[in-house]
Length: 242
Figure 1 (cartoon, helix red, strand yellow):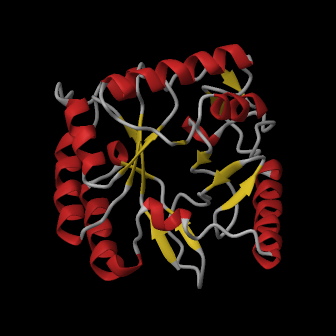
Figure 2 (figure 1 turned 60 degrees about the vertical axis):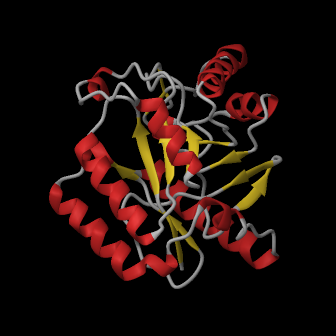
């Protein structure tokens, strides 16, 4: 099994003391995580955390080190409830699901403009709370984003001309093969959680791969397609029932 570290809710306001410790740890073991950056954070809960005024210089430095900078929504404000009718049947509130194509396109364009103004190249996306509808994918492709770090399966796959890098669980399960993408929220982490992450990196650093290497695992082989569909069916059924 290979592991891809994905960090959500990266913004000017967050737990920077813990972020600094994580960065030092990643540099020590040459770990290149995915950083899900909110380009225009308006989430008041997130804004309660300390702010770094040099935020965009830090993000640019991460990208220069080979970290994947991914667009994590636009403003992180939830406007609609999905009633489990979103693309992955995840359920809950959403920033994108239920918005018109024009509105979703506007958010993506504005977000990409912020990244561009700060000399940061964007090729990947994942929505807050894992919630999408078909308009989300139409808008992403319209503006040149063909990689989404969400979905079901043990290997990346292509669907509707988009490469999906699956993210299955909130906790890390050591499966016998395939790719497991973590979901880490720094703002929710305690020192104990950080020590668990340190232990994971020390013991599994050879299995923790970069985003490019994760993309290299993309497979459209029949066995992998069947396995991905089976996992999708089981998890969607579980989410619909519960």
